[in-house]
Image 1 (tube, rainbow, N blue to C red):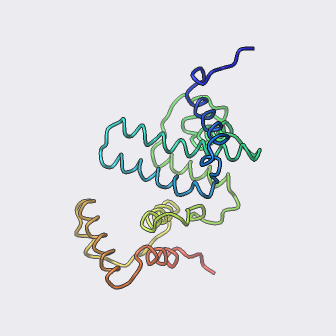
Image 2 (cartoon, rainbow, N blue to C red):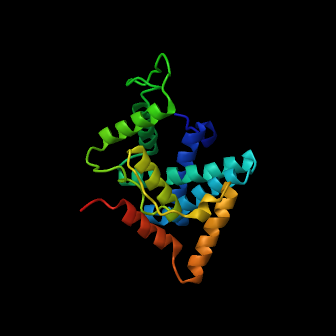
Image 3 (cartoon, rainbow, N blue to C red):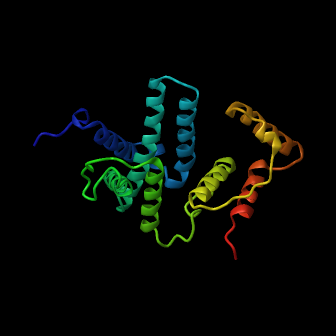
Length: 220
């Protein structure tokens, strides 16, 4: 029976095979673990963001997206070596989740709806409702927000979740921030806050994490 060459595989199948072979024959790749890959996953994700935010060309964006995809394939390969799941399982599960969480587009069997009248607000409401039904053990809107998120991003995520849950959030007034008329000006103000914190020996990220915990702590 003739063997299939790498070039004859579909692109994603070829990538999966290449990664499997690297895991087997490259000592460096073979030594990787889920834990050791975390720093690379975060770094590659931030590089994609930087490529987009700086207006880099599509060739660079394509390459950076490939680096993120490599991380996904590697993590799936590690799991496959343990006999738990494969890359196909990851892709299959993601497709099913997208169908399940977007009932305004898909019927339960995955076919398209006849019409797509949902507003953005309705889409968000349905998405949240499906997520809640999927994870009934979660007791509040803030569960599932990663602790590892940078504090500024984490603060915005908490605030977004609070607003979507209908909560009224009272924050201390900061007149200086209200003077910002663009993200560039806001960025300058935030940098000034971090600089001031550093000069006083404070850790801005830790301080904001503490504020998030105090503001959104569950009542005891």
